[in-house]
Amino acid sequence: MSAYFKDKVVVVTGGTDGIGRALVDALLNMGAKVATCGRNSDKLYQLQAHYPSSFLHTMVADVSNENDCRRFMETTIKVFGGVDILINNAGISMRAVLKEANIEVIKKVMDINFYGVVYCTKYALDSIIERKGTIVGVSSIAGYRGLPGRSGYSASKFALQGWLEAIKTELMQDDVHVMWVCPGFTTSNIRNAALNKDADSHGETPMDESKMMSAEECAAHILTAIRKKKRTLVLTFTGKRTVFLNKFFPKLTDNMVYKFFFKDGKLVK
Image 1 (tube, rainbow, N blue to C red):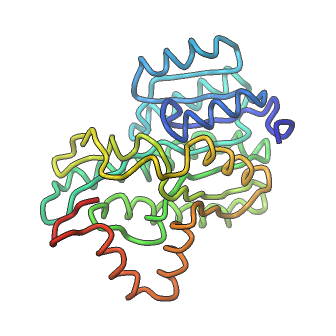
Image 2: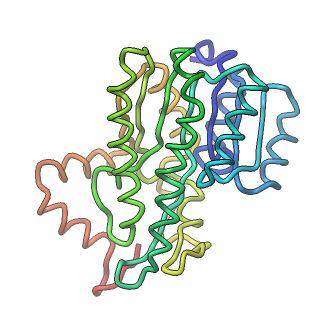
């Protein structure tokens, strides 16, 4: 698989933690030229120090900021000459029921998870079309099934998948491949960084991370799917089962999801 990515310019948003960092590591080890961004300058500095080569370009950027996304893509194209593959990985989650959540929580999640993808894709698009490249959206099972306590997150992923499906069809004649991947429950920082009802970071996760797919395994599956030009990728048994049951037995799934996320009427996961 390494030969496929060798010398390709791959942009990975949110590449300092979790799946994003695993993607950056794997791609650099396969000889790709990688550009990544994040909001934490210290983590980006550490990443750059770990890979002191001309094959890595980093920039402090918040994908919810259109100008940051524009500058990130412009500098990437200036450094590497273009973009072959864009992996829209940056994202944030939330944990708060609607009755308690501040509207700002849902807006913040939507700005990062949906508009961040729109901005980055738009500003990389001309180069991707020129190179007949690939656009990837890292979505979630929440893009197939609305999850309680994560209404804004689910909304952002439903929007993301609908938008990607629309532009996939638009770009068929340009030979641009568009796909979205749904990692399921994967070890990452997204649950620790999930926003609470006041739009602040929880700083902890209610899930048992040790039982989840590793970020490295998830990244390997994503890169294989990109190479094979798959349309969609749903990972983990739990993820595939949830998508299947929700499609054919939605009422049953409502009850199963409620029992998983609630205990004594309170959100526990």
